[in-house]
Image (tube, rainbow, N blue to C red; front, side, top):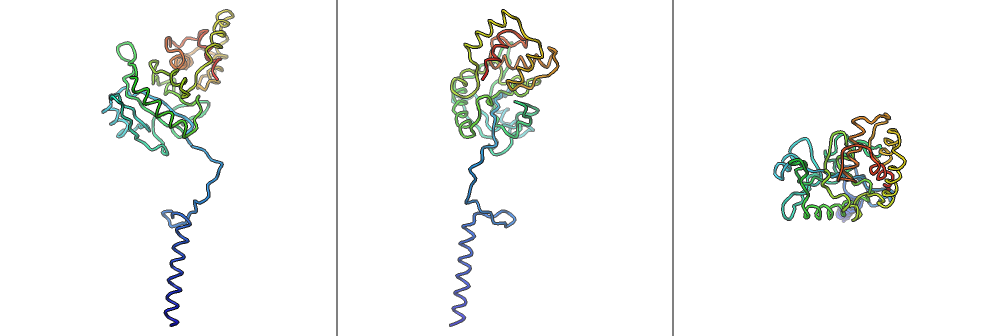
Length: 265
């Protein structure tokens, strides 16, 4: 009798230990028991930016490049009708899409961004290929989800040219930034304020180049601090113009460009 009772007690201990192990949560590969039953309220997403690109390549080649080469993006929106959305990298992982980049003083944007590629040839025949209506609708639906889940600020929905103006020009001046901003998916400037300031700059003249460079940096751009209207500064001005004034993007400082910079939130 005593041996049977001992066996019963031993079995009961095994069952209880198994139950307690299950309550403690999953084990790590090393066998360490980790209790995940309590989650801190002080936390947020690691994702702070969305970077938009065009592919230049068509869909088959873009898929090959983004899945098999030394570059990638989280999402690819094709030019099919309707467009197909591929997720090539999980949002919890780093995609290699931004490269050397900077925005509001932060570099290594791959570590904190979602990259979205859109199938578009970019510059063609002296102009720029337009994005299809269905591509933009698809992009807006995707962005609404990504921006809401990660609580991304409007100013941090950017183009590759915004964060790397010295070497990139995508998504280009054909991209409808204002339409996205009107839907709450990006930053836009106070147009009435910009109109007033444009007239003031035309009347009073432009400030020194060093002041212009300071305005660019306040808007988030990685602008030189040389006080000289050099090639690098012109490239940053061109990126601003492609984003906010795509009818003219020659990189020249003018009254309207400076007014736009001053009217950005």
